[in-house]
Length: 174
Image 1 (tube, one colour):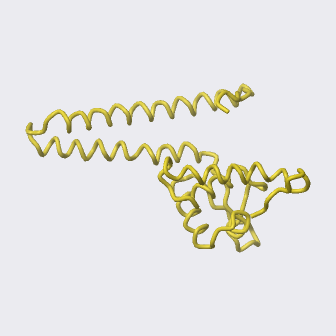
Image 2 (cartoon, rainbow, N blue to C red):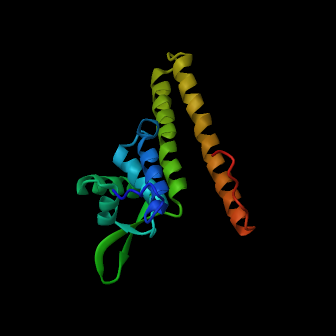
Image 3 (cartoon, one colour):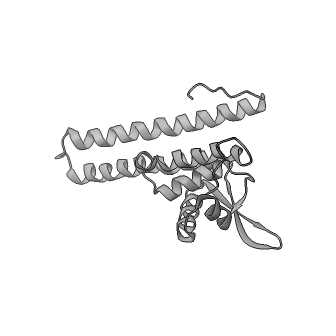
C-alpha cells in the first residue's frame, strides 16, 4: 500500500484516500459485507483515475487477486461498479456506476420485500391462526418498503433538480 510521508511530501495527497479506504473497511459489521468489498468500494469512490483495472486495485490496496475479483464481481452484481472495455486493451476496467448508490440501496431494500412476501405467504397459509407477531412483521415491512422506495425516488429527483440548478452541496454531517 502506498503510504504518505509524514512531512506531507510526495504522496501525501493519497493519505486521505487510504484512510478513507480503511475507514470503509471498518464498516463491515454495519454494512454486512466482507472487508475487501468495503475497501474496494471505498477505493473506487476516491481513486484517480476513476477507472481502475483489477491489477490497479490489487496493487493499491495490497489485496490478493482473488479478493479483488470477488469484490468487483459483488459490486458489479449489485450495480455499484460498472465494467468497461477499451478498444485495444484486453483488461477490464471498473468504475463507480453513476447510478451505483441508488442500485446499492435498491438491492438492500429487496430484503424488505422478501421478508414481507415470506410473512404474507405464512399469513395466507395460517388461515387466521397467526397472531399479531406475524401480522406485525408483514405490516411493518410493507410500510418500510414503500417508504424507503419513495424516499429514494424523491431523493434522486431532488439531486437531479439540484444538478440542473447548479446546486452546491452542503457539508452538514462531517
